[in-house]
Length: 60
Image 1 (tube, one colour):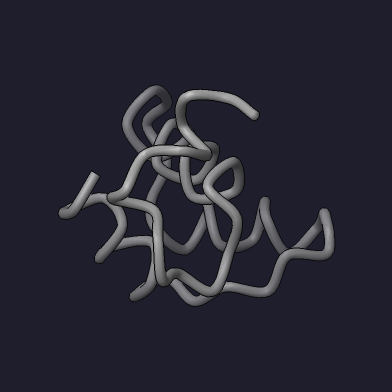
Image 2 (cartoon, rainbow, N blue to C red):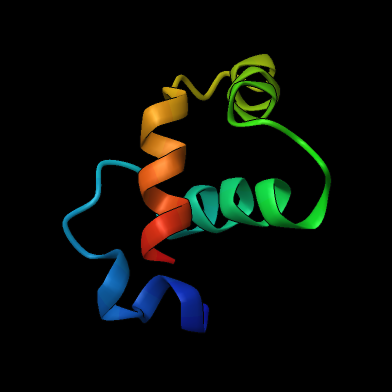
């Protein structure tokens, strides 16, 4: 298991740590809006709202 997956910050979240980390990385690494990140994840079959991504970005 990776260090990200074992981090206690990711416990009690609906999505795996890897998905959360990827969404936050996309948002901060590239000039994307929250809705663009939402659409990119949806294209890969991961249904998450832009509000959830916003809360992840604030927390992580």
